[in-house]
Each structure stands twice: as structure tokens, then as C-alpha cells.
Length: 322
Length: 75
Image (cartoon, rainbow over all chains, first blue to last red; front, side):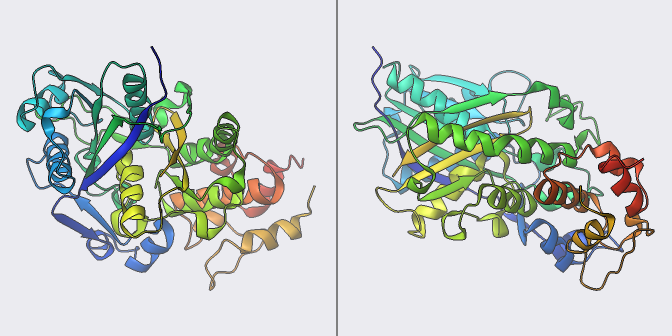
């Protein structure tokens, strides 16, 4: 039986201890200034894991924070979805390690999936499918990424954008559902434009394995994502003006500004929390939603269009009614 | 098709305030030229001229006139 009943209920996130400012980034450059970096990428601060801290560690901290913040009984979780491109090992599945470390029940399902900037919206879609098909009632969706592990210190451009973080969400069966219909897609022809050839994150590390062709990734975004936004609206029988907030993957200032301009989204409906957090890959959207809810910018009853896009190329989006 | 002077005028909008440029200038020697500036050039062509600019055109161009000729197929 398939009933539309999945709801995004709770969100928490974790930011690691180390802050990297634009001043820090400029120490190894003779040409860049902190002001210039800010002007270009729109970021003042980004986060880095401490040595030895991995995505699973951050994911566990985000989940533990959520259990406390919402007084959520972890025994009620019957499925973990863990999104990362920096798993602890090639195998086993990091979600299995998380199940054990969080002390979740053994009847809990657990799987990893490897996606980047579209990872949150894909996870939400998978969670909704599991709940709507009555396979599970309470999904713990964790997104966690340590792209800093991939980056060479001399690569100021990518170091200025990416930030480490994790987010944890609970998707539960609750009527009425607040997660509307999804649009998703893939264009694997762009796979080489954002890639890491690192073999493992514990051992056999290949240095300088991160590569991003920013211009090609930008072109994919600029020429593909606006039509996806319109498809999401069509799929949900909604008009552009019905949307209260547009929460896009927080890629960088130039990407967000280009999309905002192209889609003619008014400033007051366009969410941007990039400045103090940076691009946390799969966690940008849940962090933005949480910040929006905490600051009361996003309020009950509002329609929020979310869309993740990037490495793969891969994209997915939907609308959430808060 | 827009004329070269209009293109020059549009291009100046994405430069730093203190920068000057002519059609003969090598835009890759501009102070503002870096990997992110390339994104701004792509956006300029999309926004102003509705052109999905091939990145190889930027890579193969040096002067602004060169970029104009290649992007607008002026031969």
C-alpha cells in the first residue's frame, strides 16, 4: 500500500571546531586578499574537521544533538540513510557503524549512498518512499561530508568554498504529509568535472586527487537548474508566486546570484546562509532550513522549494510545506 | 548581433572599478581574472546575449576582440 504520509519533522546539524577565515586562506597567497575572496565567493568562514574526525563522527554528533534537542527516542528509528562521499572505509557501510555507535536497535535498516550536493534531496526522496510504502516509520537521514580531506592546502579556490559539516533529520509517517512531489535527474556525462580519485579515507591516500572544473559545473547549473525549478512547480501544480522561500544548494555566491537573477527570484524569498558556513555539500539545504526555522524566516504553513545539484551531475528537488 | 563596442561596454560591467580595458587588451592579464571570473564571463554571455558560451572559446582567446570574434562567429 502506498499512502502519501511522510513528513520532515526534525532537523539538527553539527559544525566541527576548526574555523577557517579568509585571512587564514590568504596566508599562503601573495595575490589574494580576504576582501577579494569574500567578494568572489561570498564566504567569510568555513569549517574543518579536527585530525581524525570523519564524516561518521560528525553525523553521529548531529544525530545525538537531534535526539536531545527534540527529546526524540532513538529506539523509534527503524532506518538510517547516510549520505557521504567521504565514508570511513570502502566497506563496511558507514551507516552500519553509525547504527552501532548510536545504539540503535538491530531491526534498523541502514545504508550509505554516495551523492554530493544533491544528496539531501535524494535522501529525502528515498526516506519518503520508505515511509509512504509502509516499509519504515521513522527514518534518520544523515548527510555528512569532509571535502577538506580531498583538498590540497595550495588549492585556495576550492578551499575557499568547501566546508565540513553534518546534518541529521527525522522523516516520519505523519498525516498530512509535508513533503510534496519530487523532480530528479542525472547527467553522468559531466562526471569528470567534479571528481576525486582518492582510494580510501583511512589508508592508501592519493594526494592531490581532487579536481573541479568550476566553469563546466557552473554551466551545468546555469543552463539546467532553472528548468528543473519550473518542473518542480509543474509537478506540484503550483505557481512561482506560491512559493514562500527558495532554498537552493548553497554552492557559492556566484552560482546563487546567477540562479536568482535568471529565475527572477525576489531577494526576500531567496535564502542564503553561505556567508558564515560555506558550501557543506550535501548538508547545505538542511542547515539552511534549520537556520531559516530558527530565525523564524521560514514559518508554519509556508511552502519552501528546495533543490540540490552538482557532482555527478545529479539533481533533485521538491517542495516542503512547513 | 551586438557590435564590438557594446560588447566592450558590457564586459566592463564585470571588471573591478579601477580596471580599464580595450578590445585589444588581453583580458587574462586583468587583475580580476581568475577561475571565478570565467564564471562571470559565462554569465555575461547568457544574460546579455542568450549564448551558452563554450569554455574552449575563453581558453583559446586572449584579447577581448578575439573573444568577441569567436563567440559571435565573426570571421
